[in-house]
Image (cartoon, rainbow, N blue to C red; front, side):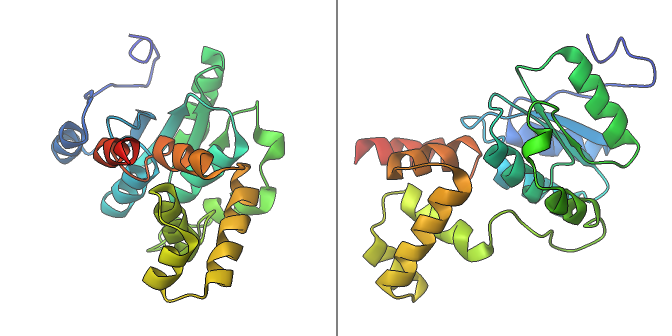
Length: 207
């Protein structure tokens, strides 16, 4: 109702599952997706990255329950064009809609001054590229996913053909980049930004 009350905005569909979202995307080809992050529904960074690859012309604004810089960086790097905190006033959402509609990248004002301008410049220049430059490297993402699922440094090293020392270096680098301290916090972070789904959450909790 809030969106439909704004002149110039037409809400073509709503979706509460990933399958429904893909179905509605094929049917309507919207200019913009307003996505509220939900790890249990599968709405996170992996889905954003997939949607941007399949629909490069469709912009995505991520609405997050968190106002942490590391979340914004990862979601923007995955392909989101805008990032808004759920805690922000409605005016912040309107600002995001206007900026993204005009081809700009938008970051919630509560954290904008803590996001590296150089990173935003890379994101603004990524349109038309096959693969955007990410906040985490491909190898860092692989290590994060494995650590979050309970793999030891030795297992990570064996799986990725690294030395144990290199695997440990990646782990330390990840904790610094993401602002976390423990393996459980790495897991929480990876889960909440949608790097894996509820089935893996259950597996993790049962171990």
